[in-house]
Image 1: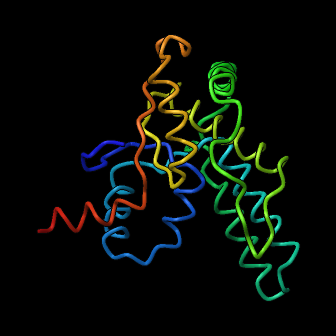
Image 2: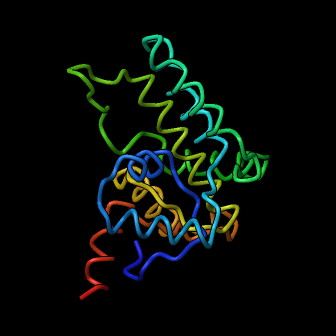
Image 3: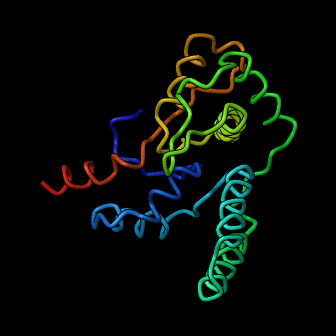
Length: 188
């Protein structure tokens, strides 16, 4: 994690995109408006999978009144394919190396609505996180996230054995929840 003010461009993890969409912090909203004026919001193809899966699951449970809104949001989300960084053989190879370095998820299963995430769901989410980190590494972009336990474990593994990634690295991380604090500190 860098202590400097994040400037970008960044690769945004699903956790960061979700948090930034939900936050009501005026400092964060101001930062995001300024960021979007300078850079596109770039995501991994994995983030597209995760977000579309979320929309599709929500659509299955949606009332007819909210279904149309969700369908418009889903269509808008995939409306600009130029902002999606592809998963290619280089990203796949980097992700495989990351999984060899950190084969087990460092964080426990999530709990939602009194239900614990299954082991297979947790492993799938872990593999998605390694693909996102690999996308950031291969494209030499800092990763904006809100998942410190998992991404820090990957960053540290790369730092300990950088030769395993063939000179790709380090993994530069920025936690989106710290943007508001940075903005407030700069205003002082």
